[in-house]
Length: 477
Ligand SMILES: Cc1cc2nc3c(=O)[nH]c(=O)nc-3n(C[C@H](O)[C@H](O)[C@H](O)COP(=O)(O)OP(=O)(O)OC[C@H]3O[C@@H](n4cnc5c(N)ncnc54)[C@H](O)[C@@H]3O)c2cc1C
Image: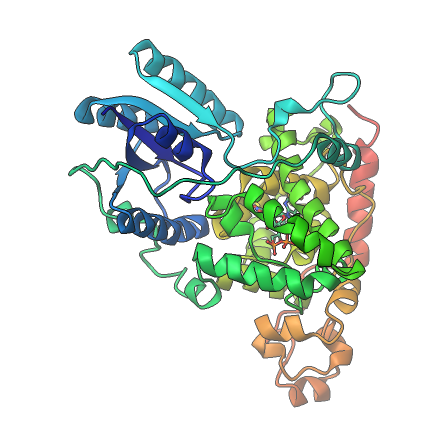
């Protein structure tokens, strides 16, 4: 029996994994491989997540008689060594879609095929791959609504069933241990993440079932409320591939469920499916417009007069801007590795518009600190908020952090959760504590500049400065 490597990357699951299924169906003995390809070996929030995702995957494989072989280094070198050392005849993987990864995978495929190694790749992380959809003029879509309509018309695929019972596994004795990959922070800045996450596939799927029974009825409204548990929190599971997007669609669109669902549930379900569509659209845009990785989609933003300022960036990163909804969001991010979507938009808008810092700085910080850090969704989220992306929110829509706080966290529960120094601040002032007089500051144990900073920028001035800057570039190209 010949042996094939199944190379796990952003698909850390056994179920509904087309590359694994194909290797099994082709009759290979399977060597399950994961290569830690990080060039910067400092731990990030997503490497924390991957540590536990790999632990679970390794355990699932061991429970059915196999081994997950772990390696570290440049994938083409590592894979070549594994192939040579272990007599591998074929390699199976699920495709990745960022420009750099695609170029790497294509080059690797050529090298391996030249050596007579069979290489097969599959779609393991998207509903529809980016090249399968173009508009009537044969060009890529730039606007979400027609893009998503076209996806739905084409049909969102439901994955076929698995057969995991009959796998012949191969094992090796040169695997690293998970600890040797050093994916957790040495200084323990990620030590609280475990209080907020259970990186377990089964647990997440159970939670998802509960979510689509009741909370989904209010998903459309509650998804904007950071004070409520109104969203699925599945993003790190999707990013790591512990759960495949097709598996979620299969649950959401299960005909038995559809027959019984209420009008409210149907509304929430459609909204949730469309949010999964935004994930697809982000990958789609990055595939068709690869320069968007670090450059604005709208070229005039290349001339934007950013005012780079390390102190302002630090204050934003550390949650010390003096605007409670911003600081609470940055604290949520720091302590949990995740931030609510509405708050992501507010903090991003504030950094880019009120503080005039380049969106790339914020995107970099998110990539280091988010457990769901996904280059396509992150770039798209930042460009959308900065107003320089495809189908972006217009630049002149400047989120006011006080107004947004009052609207989406009306009682200040979210702010108090992440900023304990504001616990006793009355509701009236929770989103603008600097308006409290001295007596009230003392009564709330929240003296401005002592327990909580004064605002680092005046909102009106910041807004006007940003709009002036935008006027200066709007008609350039
Ligand atoms: C500035 C900024 C940066 C972002 N960076 C990332 C990132 O690095 N990784 C990431 O997964 N998402 C990112 N998002 C999108 C969104 O904030 C998260 O996907 C969402 O908050 C995850 O929470 P959830 O799983 O509870 O979402 P739910 O509301 O339960 O949505 C279900 C799933 O749909 C997808 N989704 C929902 N909204 C979006 C969106 N706007 N764009 C793309 N996919 C979406 C996610 O996969 C999510 O898990 C970013 C948004 C902004 C504004």
